[in-house]
Image (cartoon, rainbow, N blue to C red; front, side, top):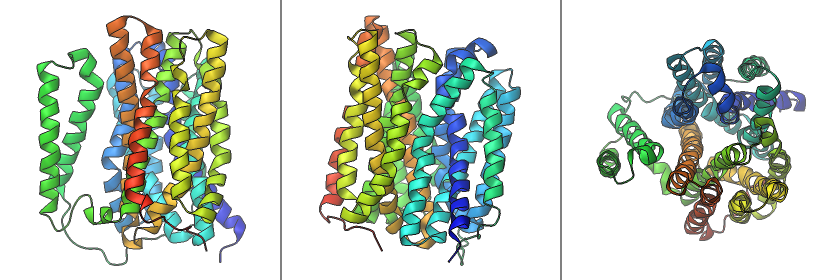
Length: 461
């Protein structure tokens, strides 16, 4: 058994690797006004570049997990961190939109390698209680990283040069590589020689891009305009085409056999929606700055309760998992997270009461998200064989990235549409910040359908 100190260093390295993603993914959400003023680019370009990292991470993360299984999980973690460093360097020197967008795409690709590779390393390196502890700390980076980097990003953008965020990301990536240099490499012993499912992958990518365009551009083009209606029809056709084509293939881009496990399916789908709930924080940040006149740093301060609660409750979720199994903690956490994140809808309140309510809401949401993290991750990993753990982790993190991306897109689309319709920031903010409730209701229904029946037992030693 490895020395506890060495295990702790490996876990720290994985957490820092995950934090590099959030430093360039989440922090940018809170510094858009500052970047727009400095780079003199349109808000549309910045909004696109903001969502591109999560989108490309989601599109390629299953591929990244498969590559990690074949070529080595440690190796792909390193490759991902190097790409992350390159992306951050490009943002630091960017003076035009094209370079900024390229950098954001690269950073999305880096996360697509790092996320599933580190999860797979946890599955293959640690056993039972060590695995669950490692998953809890990994969740600190995966879930807590968003809140931490929102605060750090706002602080740096307000009092320093916003480019320092990406300098910090480079430093953390280098430290992560150093801490993981001695971790044992793991990969699939026997690699199948089948060709990559390029057709299925292409259909999948086009389908998600079409859906993303519908959600993000529907307001500008008109929800009932010919382009949006045509794209909506195309998304339905492409979805059925993807499912039909994949069912005819022996070796699929997304291994549908994994979804024969109801707990695996429940973990993936509720993870998608839980990340959608978390993504709606963008509407709150935007409304508080635009509608209430707060700075990026002041807005970031509101997330402190969310961060602290989330980090504390992740270990509580681990303990509950070991005592009562994953179902009850996940059920309770979804309700808490969706209700807490909806507190921002009380936009009729004056400034001080509203800020207090939002702070409490973010704190409550942090409790819910923290409780959810470890039971969900452990449910996924114990229902995936070692030879498919990279792909399974990739599917899970694809759900995370796409859920967060679509949570941002849907909630901001609701917010922007009602601003345009009613010319009322407060009403639009309220409606945009009610979207977490819709996500929560759907998530609870899925959880009951996939996990209640078996009443999953605790995954403890």
